[in-house]
Length: 71
Figure 1 (cartoon, rainbow, N blue to C red):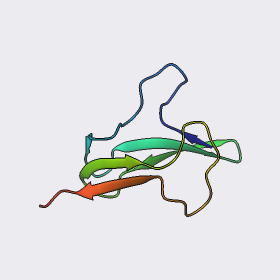
Figure 2 (tube, rainbow, N blue to C red):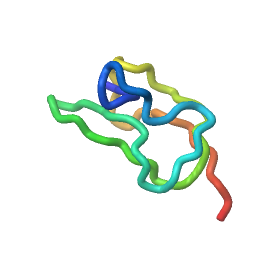
Figure 3 (cartoon, rainbow, N blue to C red):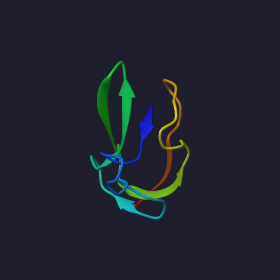
């Protein structure tokens, strides 16, 4: 399951257009009752969120499109 926020009434970790740094939390993925924070693997800008909040996702599925920032 893909979750955009840490709790149902909490704001989303990120939204399209947000700048993110390496290691920023982007979302939570629940697998086998374990909540896993998914972190950015690079700095950039969230171009598009590909997964739908509260819906199942599969291993290897792309969740975000991130435009990299040049160093």
